[in-house]
Amino acid sequence: MFSGLQGLVALTGPDTYYLSTPGALFIFDAKGWGWWNVALGASLILTAVALFSGATWARVVAVVVAGLSAVVQLMLIPAQPWCP
Image (cartoon, rainbow, N blue to C red; front, side, top):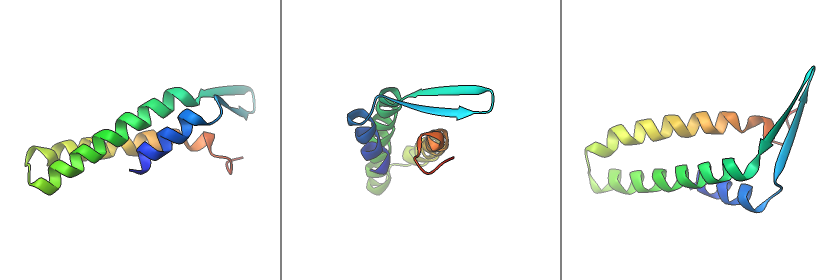
């Protein structure tokens, strides 16, 4: 649910985030990441429902989707306000 909520916040918030490093400027589109997070949050919720209902295929899907969610969350670190 956290990924879906974070995606909705990214869709309704500012359009872009800027990250300045020595010798480079990175521009992130929050709307694109918002849609990825909404889709990822929905797939996580559906996989959780399948896990609780006892579907055996959901075990593999849960590991893959949780790993993908972890990578997406790590990629959003530069957009956080407390990062230098």
